[in-house]
Image (cartoon, rainbow, N blue to C red; front, side, top):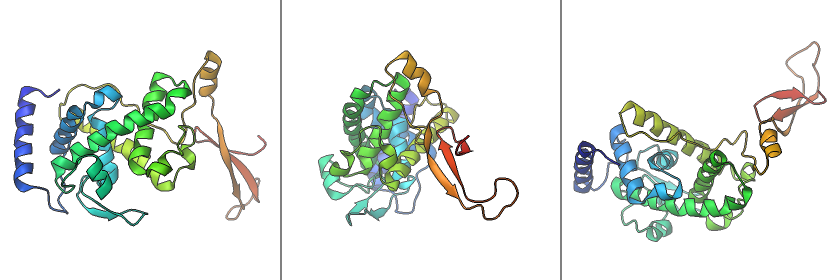
Length: 257
C-alpha cells in the first residue's frame, strides 16, 4: 500500500503520463517512476491474491524492454510494441488500447501476470512443492506464460523447464533478475517492507517434495548431464579426451569419480 505522500507523488506521475501520452521510443523511465508504475499496476490487478507483487511487474518489463519503449518482432513474424512488448491480439485480450503509453502498458502487463499466475498455479498444483519451491516455480510458470504462445506454453509441466526454448529460459532468468533489481531499488528508496523474493533457479531446478526423505534428497546435488573435453590446450595428468559430469550445484567432476 502507498503512504499518503507516495500516492500524491504517483498521482503527479499519472498526470504527466496522461498528458504526454507516452515516453519517446529512446527515453528511459527513471527508477522511482518505474517502481511507482509497478506498484500501482500490481495493486490495481490485485496480484497479492495470486502470489505475486510489484517486483514481478517490474521484472517482466525489465525482461521485455529494460524499461525503454520500443517496437520488436517475434519469431512468428508478428510485431510487438511498447514496454510490455504486446502483440496486437494479446493487447486486445487484456484491454490495452495504446501499447506505447507507459502507464497503460505496465497496467496491462500486470493484468496478464495475474492471468499467468492462475495458469501457472494450476500447472504445478500436483507437484507437492514446499512453500518456497512453489513460490519460485509459480514465477517460473508466469514467465513461461508471458513469453510463449498458447500451444508452446501448454507443453510446460513444471519440471521440464530445461527443454524450453533458449529464449524462454533467458526470459525466466531476466525476469528474476529484474525482480531482484526492484527489490534492491525498493529498499534503497525506502519503499514498503516486503517478504523475501523467491525466484526460480534454472541451474538447480525445483524438486517436488512429498516426504521427509524426499526433502533430504532435495538438498543433494543432482547430475544434470555430461560434457566431453578433447584435452587440447593442456598436458600432464588428466590430458586427453575425457568425460565430465555437471552437477546442479555447479560442480564439474571427471566421470567415474
